[in-house]
Length: 189
Image 1: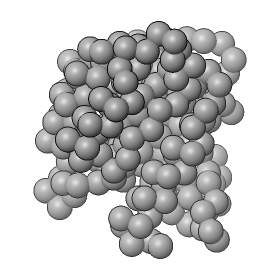
Image 2 (image 1 turned 135 degrees about the vertical axis):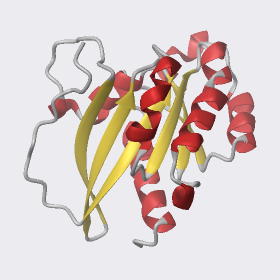
Image 3 (image 1 turned 180 degrees about the vertical axis):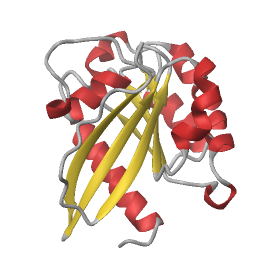
């Protein structure tokens, strides 16, 4: 298995580069989220994610061009030994769970603790989102929005979203919100 997915080197006209890390259990929809948000970085052939997948998306916020480097860590906490290298330089984090699988929400705390332990001392707090994936399966929902928002508040996430990678609902909105929040947090705007 390839440890790192090849990142196509491309000329990006940007004013700022932000690194966003996405965490969550296996099969919560992290890779599909990335494929929906940055379809041009993936061929149409579905293949299993590698240990780390990386994609780049350029956004325009106001007059600034922002290059988002979006990193997904493989689903097993056994990859914890690479958390420090994976998280280094992160500007923001997305912690995903599956709205149809309660155990994926229970594990958010483990992902968050591992992430915060891996951050440098000078950057112990960065903007993070808690995201309920697979909104298109809402008829099979096991976790209410109310319960999820309560947990999001408990762990001091900046905001809670639900999205569907299948329909694209809230995907762009979520990344734009996180990008703007990071820019404000780091005093770029």
